[in-house]
Length: 110
Length: 120
Image (cartoon, rainbow over all chains, first blue to last red; front, top):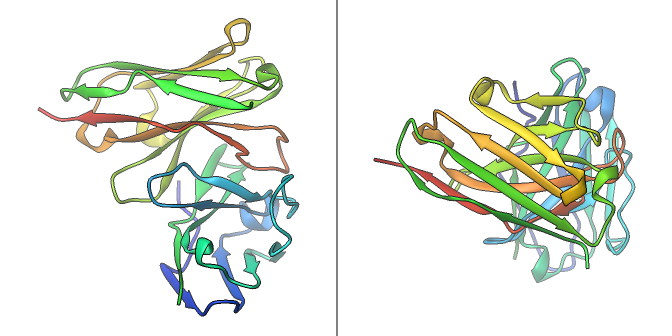
């Protein structure tokens, strides 16, 4: 079961905007979209956006997700120190009947 | 309060077995698809298995097929993972997680995780 592709690291300045990408194929991201999770060191992940690009209750409007073809994106505006974390994309592959994750992107806020 | 609490992790020798449990509270467990997701030390997230609300469908990552079995007891609000023939590469923190909106959402409830260490 192949995974989704994310850049290993992204660095942006405080109050800037970061866009994280997640590349899949027509059977996973292209078919189902991608959900986004954030994980701080030593803590479980937290859902930021579902495969339908909707934010769960309580998630800041600074986080917005989108998709173009087989590439999903998460845009974070007004970067804050607490945004420094690992970000994962994930989706369900209907042909493999398997969830797949990206390798994660470590976001550094300078 | 919505909560998932895992238990059952520990140190086991290669070839051994462990049974993980996950106790759910604060939400209607029987309406959620549930999964186990693991994270090896210093590595990313890996989905292990999931189970439909009524237990009628179960799916596994290839690397655990035939060795791990996922199950649930909706009367007890509990999820389980029976792990047999454990290998060094199964060493990870195992998270219990659930989807409240199947097909369009994501994993929106997570436990704190339980550490499984496979080593001689």
